[in-house]
Image 1 (cartoon, rainbow, N blue to C red):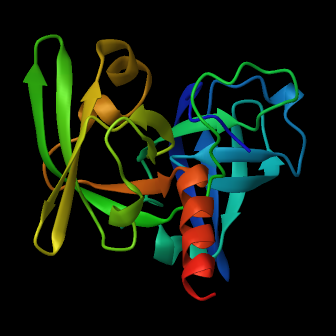
Image 2 (image 1 turned 180 degrees about the horizontal axis):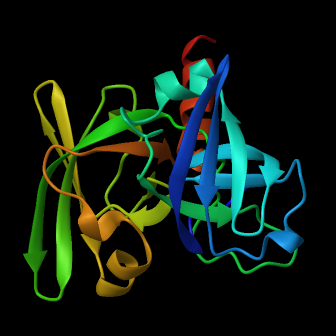
Length: 202
């Protein structure tokens, strides 16, 4: 379980096919406090630490995970938003995040507005029903508030405001039109959808 509050930006330093992908990620985390088997969210994907060194850790990325994450995510040199798993008693600064990608969005527009950055993201049909103005969404592992939602025929756009602090401490400040991002819907919206679907069948 995570909160969507990024605590480090890591960088992929090696990708090795071993049936699954063994991905090595350089980090500023104090890895003496990270156990083998611990969970770390990597740009919104919950992964298990299987090896570690002084300044890096390795994870195994399954074919299923590769297929669900943004294209090109597991590439040497790519920077990732990192968050360690939530501990009992930690401050819940964002919202409850599971680290499971629900769909891949596409940045339609990234433009400076005042001191912030306005992002417009196209959501896939599987994610669109769960987006609401002032609701929560996770983009590449970052907990954000949706400013507005536009349904345009078969396409749904949602709008985000990225403040300078968020742009500086995550990878979101470097997004541009055409980039793909991992999306996770609010877990409350997921349960509400299930309850509504169940009620409709009775």
